[in-house]
Amino acid sequence: MAIIVSYQPDLARLVDLLKAVSSQTGSVVVVDNGSTEDVAGSLAAQFGPDVDVVSLRTNLGIAAAHNVGIRWARGRGARYVLLMDQDSVPEPNMVQALKMAHENLVAAGNKVAAVGPRSKDRQTGYLSPHVRFAGFRFAPVTCEPGQSVVLTDVLISSGSFISIDVLDAVGEMDERLFIDQVDIEWVLRARAKGYQAWGHCEAAMSHSLGEQRRRVWLGRWREIPLHKPFRYYYMFRNSVLLQRRDYPCRDWRRVDTIRLLQMLVFVTMFHPQRFRALRSMLRGLWDGVVARE
Image (cartoon, rainbow, N blue to C red):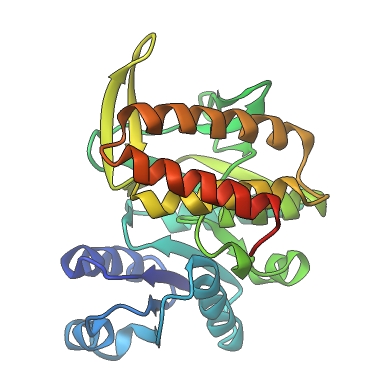
């Protein structure tokens, strides 16, 4: 079952996503996170009973919405779930490729947390590699010719193909984090229980990263995703909260600390609302230190 979380969606883009997903999965549920418009009514007019919609009264966050969908899927006998954001669209045969890879990995004796596709930036067409922790950075993992999957240390929630059995063993998403680092936290928790995340070399989806992009020169040209100021509160608070827990690995702690420092510099230099973003970062940092959830 595909679980799509929506919040104030672009309905035309959401319809495109549903068409792409419904042709590749057994069933679809949309969990709408308190949108002001009637998402359920709009989708019922377009798809009728073919798409289930669960409408939450208020925005409970991405983790809670995923959990609502996971429980919906579990209650209807689904063996696997595919988590999708409203800003992602799978390419043809993506789900079948993820499912086949998952089954092959399990058959080979691997404890699989999740399998995820590569992300293609909707604006630039750039196909991102899978990455692993390496020293003080995220290092791309090369897919060799004929290789279908690679080990990865990071999977974004959108596109993640997960078995219900693993969700039962690892647990659901951490609703206290609300939005950012939810996917990272779950993978770190799964790793601590002996499971590994895998990235598919060929399966892909289009995906939007950040509300806007800024191209800057810092030794080389870089595309920096920029978010709304309030998002930086959760990025910093949730990173600090995870740093306080005992199961994240040392490699993640080191890389994430560098990531936060880089984000602080880049956002302060290039964000059009830099002072609001900076205030959000500092408030999130403080709330993380005092463990305010």
